[in-house]
Amino acid sequence: MNDNELRDELVWCVQALLEERQNHMQSGDIVQMLPQAENWNGMFLKHADADLLWTAFRALVNTRMPWEASSEFLEHQDRLLQELIARDGITSVDGTTPSPFNSHLRLWRGDITRIATDAIVNAANSQMLGCWRPGHHCIDNAIQTFAGVQLRIELSKIMMAQGHEEPTAQAKVTGAYNLPSHSIIHTVGPIANGRPNRTHKKQLRQCYRSCLDAAAAQALHSIAFCCISTGVFGFPQEEAAKIAIDAVQDWIDEHAEIADEMTIVFNVFSRRDETIYRQLLGL
Image (tube, rainbow, N blue to C red; front, side, top):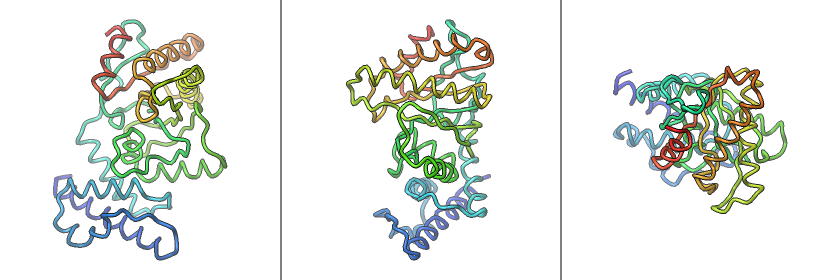
């Protein structure tokens, strides 16, 4: 796909999302329109560059209710997202760095939506429907955006069947849709607000164990963990990293019969997290 074709896909998707939103408003559904959406008209679509169109697309997707999507929209959306991911480049498990302490543990710094493992871990909120803030730079927002609208639809069905918010430290498995990974494992980490207590620490440890249990139950052999709870949930990074590695190592020791087939990647995004994990993993 060349740049003109990419822009054409963006125009089509933004137009379709705007029309969909307008149709749902007219049908009586309660929809929160974005403040700038009234200006996203034909002239906007005609003259906006690809970066501005992507901002519009992402904002519309981030605030889209979990309506069923048409096959035509999914075809265009999937083509767009897969092209953007391919342009950035996809990292395989072999492209990550193994720890000299344990060959099952590996480190990679980069965007978790660009790694091809059997599963990636999403740090979700208790509603489990993703981040609704347009363009917010959290992992939940990125995963929801690049997986596609199918992910929020699937999660909505799961949560409606469950009938209550997701408790902390459990795990739910969904498809990954347009991501290079096979599955997404969603877990709600503890909200520490910078001062984790004993319960928070126990819950964070259980997040890692629950995700590994879920991966094993699905016969998945590689998993990439984000730094659970260290963003807006406020768990101190160094302490969280120590808990994460300790919890994973204990799980491996307790599951020797299947651990030989499991590779665990600690995915970091910031330079500080990379420094912390490199030291703890002996790199």
